[in-house]
Image 1: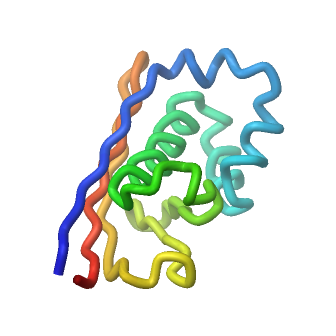
Image 2: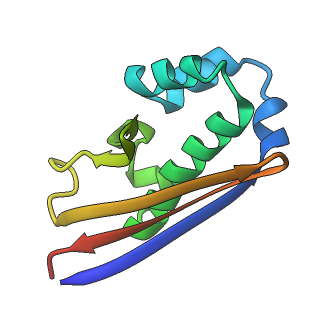
Length: 117
């Protein structure tokens, strides 16, 4: 088994300055993620943290966003954070553990992947 980690940090202002936030959200987030963002009053900290999660997973996979679609990763917030990955596209991923944090100016996300050899 292999273990890989990925992390991403981003200034919240980078998301605040997006001209067409709705278009950005439809491109990056699933319907379930958008519903969660709406439940948080479209908090820029929430949006930034969830975007960082997708970037962190792409780094752990060593693909970058080019080979991994934003829609391949979904952050689900029911009882804590659960990250779902498109296992058809990434069948060697056995498990993901993740964390998102933010504090006014910055959001950060990290993930740990367990993969088959």
